[in-house]
Length: 415
Picture 1 (tube, rainbow, N blue to C red):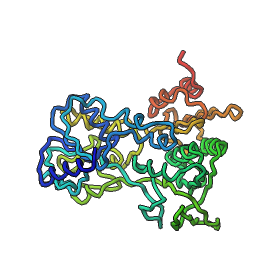
Picture 2: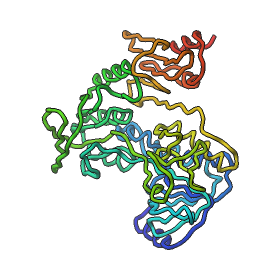
Picture 3: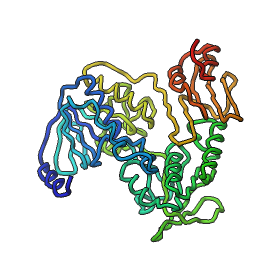
Picture 4: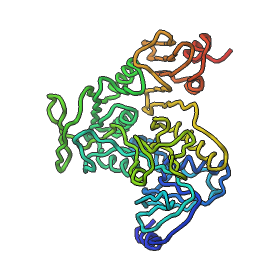
């Protein structure tokens, strides 16, 4: 859309008050999942969707691969706005929600317009969490939260550029691998003593570490960034240890994220780390719901895709007149790094327990661990061979016989 056309549309919207039965603030993957489920369940009401990006519903999970050049724009958009043709949606993109009045059930928008609603869903996502002492925005420091960040990173990552990735979790590893694919000189910095410290155990982390080093990644553990100094062609990074400062063309922060709660908190909607909702995704504030990375259910703030899809399904059913609650949430993910097959699900303690079932084939590069509490499967980590991951995930939280445990551990087909 041309800039003049956007301005004309915004000017026309100024001071205009609209009404809808359902207002969705945020137009990312959580909102896309919700709208898809509302279409599936036959929602009949009017919907207004407000998002501050000009492109909505794209697949953010693929952004590292977009940076690395293995996916195109069409791939990011391939899943957007599916199963929604039968919904009545007024999409207002490139617009922010400035304030929320839960008593009047009204939202003030950045283009001057206002929207009154019967129910509102906050799907506001999260923002990058910068290490202490580092302020954003910074011309050569970026996170990878959205499409704009990805394009910024591509601009920084010319071939042979030295790029520092701060954070050794899933996103950090995937971004670092994408930059390797662009022929960058990549250094990955992790403040703890190992990679993926919140996701997998010591053995799996060691195997991932070795695989990434073999791909050409420089990995520095137990180190932190303390200061950044900008230059015309890059940034000099100072470290917590006696390590000498180093010059980089750019820095990527993958050090976690904070739920976006400012709008809800200023409106009097209860928040803790995230926007507080019950297992039906309803806030204590009447008519206010939340899903995705901004929401907190039973003290948990989910950041992975699958639980957010479960939230969207539960909320869609409730908005369509059913009664549903969030149950049996199992967080799981595959590491999306070529040549480093890794899957984890549920709770994976750092060290192997006495009830666990383990396959460790060093020669074959395969490690598979099922984590048990008695006969109840609590979690799993698979490296080198992720066959049967979906079957394993379905059993988490359930009692499993010794024979079944062996079958799952060795990825054997049922007799």
